[in-house]
Amino acid sequence: MAVSTDAVILGAWAELTQAEHILDIGAGSGLLSLMAAQRSLDHANITAVEIDNAAAHACKHNIEQSPWPEKVRLFHGAIQDFQQQFNDSTKPLFDHIICNPPYFEQGTQAKNAARADARHTNTLSFSALQQAISQLLAPKGNTSIILPQQSLASFISQLDGHKLYVAKHLEIISVEGKVPNRSILVIQHTPLTADQQHQNKLCQTEYLQMAIRNKQGEYSQTMIELCRPFYLKL
Image 1 (cartoon, rainbow, N blue to C red):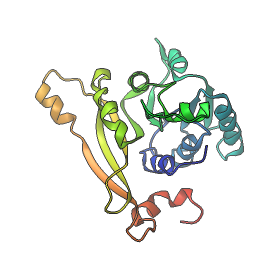
Image 2: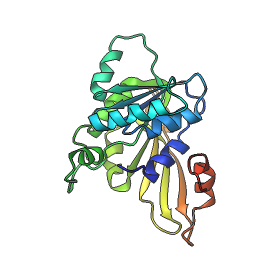
Image 3: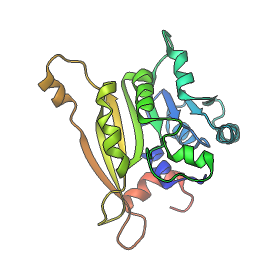
């Protein structure tokens, strides 16, 4: 599966520079984990979780060939199995979780089973993902996740049940003047307060927007500045 522009934007935009413990859920070939290694503190620890055998093998190889083999570790298995390590555990939680998840709950699936699982919620439902985030995210941590517009409503509607909310919402436009087709959400724990009005004020969402290309079809200045460290020809 090719490296996607979505993943590069997510890895470049996520607030990783001060994170010490980073979790990549559904790491695939390891792109986001390695971008996190490139952008984070020297002493940061990154854990890549990947269930698919072929993807995990590629991820392991890419970690070993990267400049950060000691900084990134692979957990080959389901996120639910990884979570079990944190039941009644003193292990530090993650101050940043990053995820480019399976996002289609319905619709036609690819004939290739691995690609179908990567794109559809066959092996990781939104509810299961949010439960993992709720358990593994540090109290003041952030989760950065990218979704297509058609999956947003379903995903956001389930957050409250896991005591999570959207702190930032970056709408991504393919070409200036078009409607957004992707969004990056920054998810945090819902603050604990008995006052519902105060809680609503604390849980307000900051909305942002960026275009990948301008009307002439060239990369926008925002895209260039954001992703230059990861592209050879920007």
